[in-house]
Structures are given as structure tokens and as C-alpha cells.
Length: 325
Picture 1 (cartoon, rainbow, N blue to C red):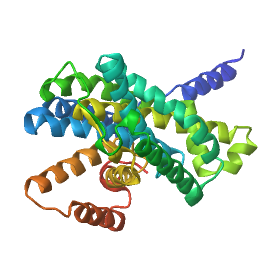
Picture 2 (cartoon, rainbow, N blue to C red):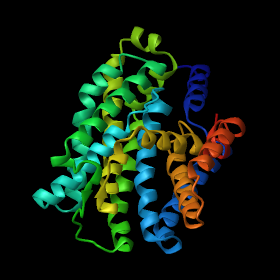
Picture 3 (spheres, helix red, strand yellow):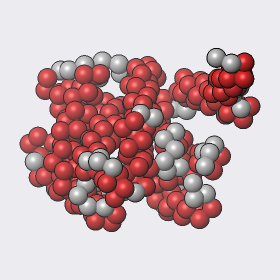
């Protein structure tokens, strides 16, 4: 090899060698780690700053919001029927705890798996539609399940609901910390899904399903898998809700429950993943404060916040402050 050829080869090798990380990227990565550490500290402190029962409520709705955001923000499917999975899991968790005596974590897992199984036939039919048609199909199935639960009073308790769901950890303060690992596990699962090759395919399907199909991806299969994973996360939240309240009512299956979760996601930021827990903390805390103050028109306030968020913060709070476009 001549001297000139050696110099060219050396220059090419140096050009291909990765350079130092841009300062902005390092700062963003450090900022994300700081935010994560702050979120963990906040979660550990929460039952000291609020009533423990309210803190448990925030955990439940945080998981539900992340489940909705996984479907809405990363697949582009708006579901108004996810209360079917939240409520079904809550009932299943309560029933296995009452009749089989399963301990807290196993009962919640049974509820989440029940919700996932229920999502198979519903999702198989729903993901063949998009937009408002998908939303209406999910809403119709949710209302059907609501009616069945109301009529099947021998199993669900009907309008009286399931009462006195057993729980070994009776103190809400300690129950919060027992539930926290489940919530962290659900959030980590959602994060791994979004940042995996599977998650990138979901985003590609959201942005251009025809192109994804042309590239050889089974669009309906990917949507169904995302639907089932979303139902599993919603089921985790519903199971925690049943154990946290030690009571399950028909309201857990009502479409307004799905609507509240959508409002939480919009407030936090669609497609941000972490906006869901932020929105859950804000909405649940606000509702608790309004209820304590004796204000009865809570829906009016949350509806107004939803309208203002859509008009002023179209990316939601988290999306406006932290999301990089």
C-alpha cells in the first residue's frame, strides 16, 4: 500500500469513528434522568403530602391513562370503551379475592389477564375500523358489558356492587407502597413497548398505515397486539382500584370512566407516555379538593379544563414543557 493510500484509509477511518456526543443531547439525557429521579422521589413522598387513599387513587388512574395513551398516542386509536377492561378487571380482582382468597398481587394479575382475554374478541372486531368508527365500536362493547354486569346481579352485585373486597394490608398508607411496584412495573412495560422495534412499527402505522402495509407489516395484527397490551395496563389499574377501594361499582364500567381517562391523557399530553401520570395527579387532586370544599359540579370544572387544554396547550402540559419535536 502506498503512502497516499494509507493516508486516505486513515482519514476514512477517522471520519467513520463516532465523534463526541453533542452537548445538547447530553443535556437532554441528563434532564430526563433528573426528571425520572424527581418522579420517583415524588411518588415515594406522595402519601405523606396527601391522604393515602387519594394517593392510591392517583396510582390507579395513572396506569389507566398510560393504557389509553399507548393506544391513542402511539397507534392513533381513540377508545371510549376502555372502561370495559378497567371495570372487568376490577370485578374479576374482587371476585377472586372474595371467593378464592387470592392475595393482593395475584388477584390484581388475574384481573389484568381477564381484561386482556376480553380484549381479544373486542379488539379483533374494533381494529378493522379507524377514527370515529373505532371509537363507536369500543363504546358499544363497553355499554354491552355494563348492561350485562348490571343484570348479572348474582355475580356482580348489580347496583349494590361488590362490597368488602378482602385485603391483607388494611392501612391505605402501607397499601400505597405495596401497590407502587406494580405501578412502576406497568409504567416500565409501557416504556419498553414504546421504545422497542414493535413500538416504532406502531408509530409507523399511526403515521401512514398504507405505507406500513406496503412494507409488509400486518397492520391489523399489530393494532390488535397494541389493543391487548393497552387492555392489560388498564386491567392493572382496575385491579388496583378494586383493592384500593375494597369495593367495585357499576361506575367502573360506565363510558364516563373512559371519558375521564381521555381527559387525563389530553391534559398530560397525548403521545408523551409520562403525561398520563401527571394528568392523573392533577385531576384526582383537583377532584378531591373540590369535593372537600363542598363543590358539587366537579364535571363542569374538569370539562372546562379539558376545553382550555385543547385551546391553549394542544400538546398537553408535559408535551408543551418537555416533548421535543
